[in-house]
Every structure is written in structure tokens, then in C-alpha cells.
Image 1 (cartoon, rainbow, N blue to C red):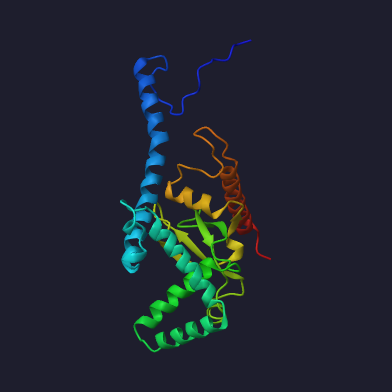
Image 2 (image 1 turned 135 degrees about the vertical axis):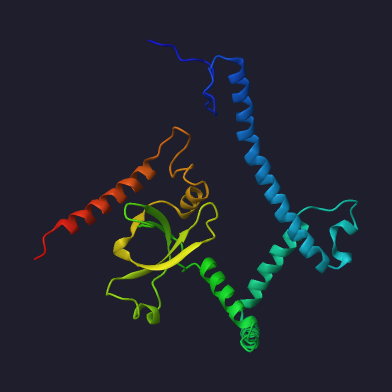
Amino acid sequence: MTQKSDQPDDIIETDLPPSGLGARLRNYFLTGIVVAGPLAITAWLITAVVTWVDDAVRPLIPELYRPETYLPWKIPGSGLVIALVAITLLGFLTANLVGRTLVQLGDHLIDRMPIVRPIYKTVKQVFQMLFSKSGTSFRKVGLVEFPAPGMWSLVFLSQAPSAEVAKRLPGDDDQISVFLPCTPNPTTGFFFYLPRKKIIELEIPVEQAATLIMSAGMIQPGAVSTNGNQNAFAAMAAAARSAQAAREDKTKEPAA
């Protein structure tokens, strides 16, 4: 019976001899990069967002009410806290009758502005869809055969088309709106309508699908490490193969 080594496994694998000093130093350095890199980038992003909100909100606050007026230093995040409180208070005021009346009055005024009206309405509909509890956009992930037969792409499933669009789409199939994101920026891509029967729905979260797209396949759903479990990706591939086999069998069937 072999004895288990007391040395911990390396996070980073290399093609150098494991017993060599150079390989060990390289592993330690890359392991440090793996640990420190995400922490540094996360801290930088959070600091950048907090600083941006502080710089945008602080000029709107009278100097008498700023914390740095009474302290020898600025308090990071004070503007962010004030912004969160102000937005929450705005939502509270809008929820009552007077607030709704004012919002409707503002919408009525914007409807009279030719250039501002389409921009405002589009942005408002997007925000209502994203933050609405009953919204169904981008809640599911699917596979579609694109851009060529035998090639499969991830898509985010949205809503069914409106009545005006649905009655002009050819065929009687049940259509759905899909968004096909691009790599590595999932905010860009292609939007189109597709019959539901041509979509293979996947049981993976939208966040994991976005990570898969942004990493160009390097981070697979369900993978816990470089050699970890990839059952979710295997299920995706099996579903695609099953759909392709079913399509080929259907084309081979003799016409009645």
C-alpha cells in the first residue's frame, strides 16, 4: 500500500519536472498570482465604483452635511450610502398616490419630446423587465444550432414575440425571443426569433452560461478545478448530439 504524500497538491500544473527547484518556484509564483489576482481586481473594481458614485453624489450634498466637513479625512462610500438611501426614499415616495401622479405627469411631459421620448421609453422598459419580479427575460439558457449544421451556440431565452410580430412570422410553430451573446463580451450579440422546438433548454444558471461565454470555454459549468467535474458540459454535449441524431433520422425517413 502506497503512502500518501504530506505535501499539498499544486494549484498550477506545469510541464517541468515536479522535483526541480525551478518548477517549484514557478508553481509558487503562479499560485500566488491565482490567489492575489482575483482579490486585487475585485478590490480595484469595488473601489472604482465607490469612488465614481462618491464623486457624482458629493457635489450634490451641501457642504454643511458632508462628513469630511467635520473630519480631517474623507469617508469612502459616504456618497454611495447617500445614493442608496435617496433611491430607496424615491421608490417609497413613488409607491404612493402622489408619487405615482408625479411620475405619470413626468412621463406625459417626456412623451411630448420627439428625441428624448424613444430613448427614455426604451431604457425604462429594459429596467422594468430586468428588475421586475414577474419578468422572464434571461431566466433560461439554451442551445441552438448556429452558425452551421453541427455547430451549437449558447443562447439566453427571453419572451414570446408580441401579437403583431407573431402573426407575421411564417409557420405555426411556437416562437420565442432569443439572444445569442458574443465572446468575450456577452453584452453584444445577435437577437432573433426561433421556434421552441429548435432550442435545447439547459439546466444551468444564466451566470454560469455568461462565465462560459466570457472565458471562451475555459471555465465550464460545474468545473471546480482544471481536472474537476464537468458533468454539466457533458450533458450539454449529449443533448446536442441527441438533437442532431434525431434530425438526421427524421431526414432519412421515407416520404409517405
